[in-house]
Length: 205
Image 1 (cartoon, rainbow, N blue to C red):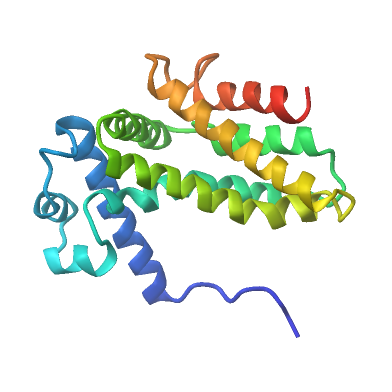
Image 2 (image 1 turned 90 degrees about the vertical axis):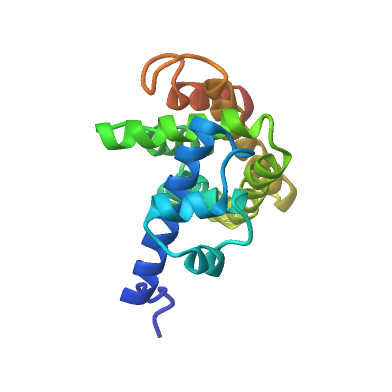
C-alpha cells in the first residue's frame, strides 16, 4: 500500500489560494501603514473576500500573515526532503536554503520585499512578532524528521534536534538581518547569501 499523501483536492487548493491572497493583502497593508492602523475589514476588502471569510480562516489580523511566512519554510523543507539520505548535512542545508531564497523573477522579488515590510512592522507589534516566532517554532519541529531522514539514521536524536533548531534560527536571523538593512533581494546582503553564511558558521564550516 502506498504511503504517499494524496494530492490536495480542488477545494483544498482553492482554500489555500484564498488564504495566501489574504496573507499578501495583510502583509502589504502592515508594511505600508502598520498593523495598528490596519483592520481586518481592510485586509478582507484588499483581498477581495467577505469579512466572514476572513474570520473563517484566521482568528486575528496578525494571524492572517501565517500562510505567507510558511511558504519559504515549506519550500526549504521540501528541497531537503528531496535530498538523498546520507548526503553531507552541511552542503545539503546550504543548497536548499540558497535555492529556497532565490529570486528567479520579479514576482519572487516582490514577495520577498513584502516579507521585509512585514518583519519591519513586527518590530513594533508583539502580536505580529508572536506569529513570526510561532511559524519558526513549527518549522523547526517539522524539520526534525527531515534531518533525521537526511542523516540516514546515523545521527543521535539530540544532535538531530540541535541541527534542526540551529538551521531554523539561521534562516530566521538571516531574514531579520536583511529586513533591518537596505540590501536588495539578490547579492551579498540578500537573504540567500546571509542564510548560507549563517549555516556555514553553524553546521558545516
